[in-house]
Amino acid sequence: MITQANARFLRVSARKARLVLDQIRGKSVGEALATLEFTPRAAARLI
Image 1 (tube, one colour):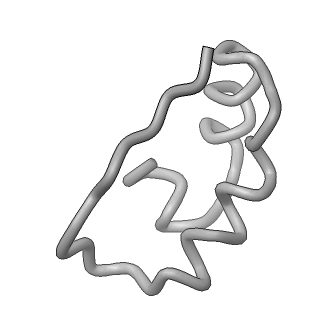
Image 2 (tube, rainbow, N blue to C red; image 1 turned 180 degrees about the vertical axis):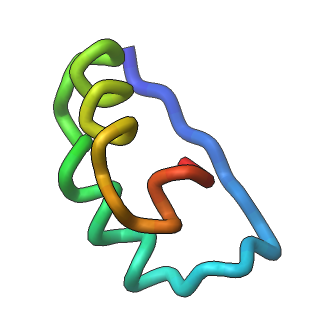
């Protein structure tokens, strides 16, 4: 299943958010949440 979400007017640059998104792309939901929990970037909290 493919899911897409759009977030507008966030106070983080697209390039910095893309770095975090590239880490979790293709992972299962559980793995992605675990990765985001321990990623020390501000964009990880918003994603």
